[in-house]
Image (cartoon, rainbow, N blue to C red):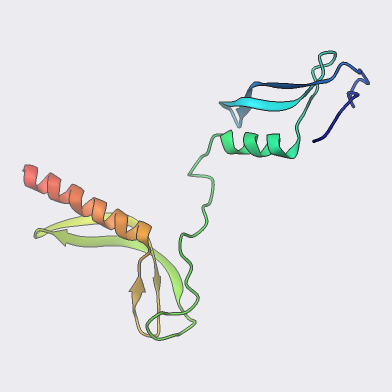
Length: 143
């Protein structure tokens, strides 16, 4: 563990390790990191964070799904059916029917092989399609 005996900002020897909730603002959104352990200087207010504290702060910062790109859930490099390496990740709206009633799922991600024309859906895509079909079934059965 890092031992700091002098504040790098003001030179005070009163710097000490504290453990408390830290309130910050991240891009205009307030956030709280509970029970964070870090170094704080009572003389000038300087705060120093070790790598563990930085990881905890990162884990507690607010997320914005519109601006943060997520990693693909499933990545295929070869087609499981024909073995082609031309397989590509695609996204399109899904249209289906449930109990004879049409439903729509926007922006379903999947892999498609242009060689054999197979389409492969990961678990998340299948769950989204199933959830929308159940919602459609409930909506239509209520009418």
